[in-house]
Each structure stands twice: as structure tokens, then as C-alpha cells.
Length: 564
Image (cartoon, rainbow, N blue to C red):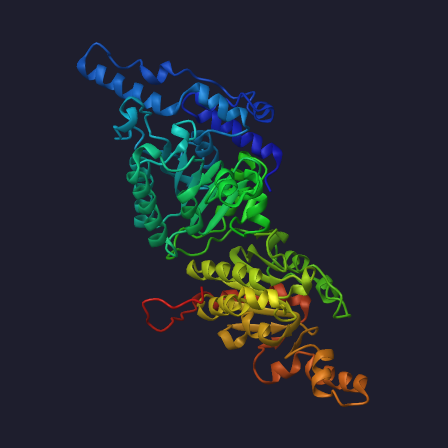
């Protein structure tokens, strides 16, 4: 995570390059005001009437009019509404864009757009820009398209022209092969426009679907997002939220009360905690706008720009052949004792840096980005600390969507396996564990990117098959000496096989000797090698280099029928 000092410098830098002081001074929230105390200010007069323009001429008058309109666009709904936005601890749409993108890189489109609605007196209520800032810029020198909804202008509500602006940059991003980031802060559809507003949402949804798997799409919810508006973030690859100021729900608390007589707050119904811990709709939550944008920049560095782009590579001083003897003893000798798989991951990846995704949802599986030998890799790992790392409905869905994203964008899959099986019980069976578990199986089987699997301890039953096994076209499959690959654990197996035996302890020892180790799988070619844990990093980096030129295609089809 970015240090506070680095955040402060980015805020100051963004404000220094912003076009005008009324839109960039963060005066209301004390914490933001402290960060921005040294930001230089400039007046709007310099924008409205450039010194080099002779305003007496017709051309000069036109230029002055254009610049005045541009100045109007810069202040959105006006200073009073900007102050209200700041009083809630929130940045404005433009401040967010300037903080997200590299210094001076933002090129805005359609700054002069206004709505075309004439009903309900709307022809007298026009705000230049129509409630959304759109354009492109760079993050650490790499191209990205951005739209940022402006809550100070009509509450950020979506009109026909507002949607048209968003669709235009989405089309351009798809054309050139660059990600799209949406900064959502909207009250929903602009009611005065009726079906035009609904049509605008549908236009955006279509762009989301057509862009899926072609360019990365990221939604950062920084305010309300309700009704039909929620489905665009749901269609994007990642949804991030800001705690205590962002909300996602199809129907608000008032409607819930009217229909179900249930009293619920916005936060309880659709806040960041609800969606990162219960529903799984959101992938990460942050404490404030500044942290969210800084972390989004960090996250962006892991992503390729499109499905035709190579995964990013960053220089690292971490030796590729580094051994870590601690890994040789990290798995407890007692197979019933837990350990933290994140400790394993951090000891293997470059510089111990692991960017975890969905850390608070379905904690019995861990997913996220890391780097190996400088290149981005995807981590999927069972977590023994939580329910022994068992697979259930939520873990299957969480991991399946992650695997499919990484496969779509050529990111190698690195899987760490310690799984006792699928979670039994009527709740799981009636909830559809068969269908949902099949999603993860489908995702791993379908993936054609490099797939490297390391079994650290248990790999039992059908869960062994599902977790990127050799049978699902795993490229290189390894086990540590602590690996146990079997239909089930020794105690359960003995109760079935030797249920009439008088000496079950001897039978259990015999079963462990025969099956609860990696040798039987290795002897059948289901494992490529049994490796010492300390050599795992060097082994994986070597394999990634070998698999760099991997070419594998699935049979031609219009599309597969994923068990949704």
C-alpha cells in the first residue's frame, strides 16, 4: 500500500496541475484539507479570457465564449455543490481523474456536451459536461480510458448524452486495445428523460459485454450506484468500493421497507462491508477516495492492456534462483494442523509482494496478483487456516471467475493446493454445490494459459481433480514431499475399506503408507516431479520461461456452455 507521504505528494501534484482552484481545493474535510494545504491556486479568469486573445474581434469573442464554456465545465454543478461534496469527505469527478492519472496526461473528450431534454423545464437546467468527465490518460506511462461521474451535476444521474459520452470512450478503448476505468458516483437514471435514460444504460451494458475478455474493465464505486446502474459494474472485471460513502443496490432501503417491511440502512443493504464480505459483488474496499485511487494505480500495473498484449514485466532485484529453507518446515507434520498459505505465497513471489483480491469473501481460497521473475502471475491457493481450505459454493464461484479473467488476458495460473475436498451438507447441496463447483472445474479445464500447480499437502477426492490437476491440462504439476493425494483422508477411507477389521489402526497406517503421499501419483505421471519446498521459486520461474511460447487452442465453438 502507498505510504501516506506518497499519497500526499500525489494529491499536491494533482492539484498543482488542475485547471482551476475552485474545483481543486479540498477545503471541507479536515484530513483532505491538511493534505492540500500547500497546493497552489489559480483563478478562473485566466481560463475565461486568455491574455493573447483580442476579445473585440469576432474570432476573439468566439474564443472567449468557448473558454467560458470550458470554465463552466470545469466547475460542474458549481462551487456550492463542490463544497457539499467535500464536506462528505469526497473528491470531485475531476479531482479523482487528476489523482488517478499521470501528471498532465489526461486528454478530455466531450467537455461541451449538454443534455437535450426539454421536458419538465429541463431546457432551462443545463450543466456543461452533463455530469460525467470522459477521456484518456496514462497510469505509469500506460494508456487507459476513464470516465468519472460528477455528483455535483444533476447528482451524476445518467442521461442520453451522459451515456453517449461513456459509450464513446468505451468504443475507442476497444478499438485501440486499452483498459477502461469507471469512477461511479451517480444517483441513477435521470428520471426526466424517461426511456432515453434507460436506453443509455442498455447501451453501456452492451459495450461492457462486447469488451469483456478483450480489454480489462474496472469499476470504482465512489458514491451511490442504484437501480439499473448497478449492472454495469457487475459486468466489469473488477468492482472496488469506498467504505462509508459508496453503495450498490438494486432497490434502496425505502423500497425494501415498503415491499418486505424490513428496516435496513444503506450501509447494511449495499455498503462496502456487505459486498466485500457477504455478497462477493465487490472485490476490494478502501477507506477513502485517495487510498482507493492510489491502490487502483498499483493494481493497474499488474494488468495487460488487452487480450493481445503481453503481461507486464517489471525489473526485480529478487534472485530467480533464491532458495528459502523456511518453506521446508512451513507445513506442520500433523496434517490436522493449519498454516497460512499466504506465508507460502509471499516467500515464493518477487519481493514478498502479493496483491490479494477479495480477501474478506470466501476466505478458504486465496486469489490475487504477484510477480515471478518480474512478470505478472495469478495466484490461486486453498487456505488451510479457514475451514481447512475446503471448496464450497462461494470459493468455487470466486476462484472460477478469477481463473477465467486471467485466462482471457494471458496471465499464467499458479495454483497451490491443500484441499480436503468439497464441503458436505444440505446447505451446500441445496444451494447448488454441484453446479457451482463445476464452474471452477470448467474454468481450469478451459484455460489455455501456462498452468503450474504445486500440491503442498492434501489433495483429496474430486477437489484434487478440480484444482488444476494434470487431468485438466495442467502444464507442470508438482508436489512437495508433504503431499497427500488420495480419494479421501486415511480415517475416512479405513472406515469404508476396513469397516469389519478388528485392527483399524494398522489398516490406517497401511493406507497412509500406500496412498497418503505423492509417490503413487508421480509413478502414474500425474505429477511431473516431487520437489523440495525451498526450491519452489526457482522451479516456477524456470518453468514460466519455458512456457512463455505455449500455444494451445480449444476446439472451435461459438462459445461454451458454462454451468452458470
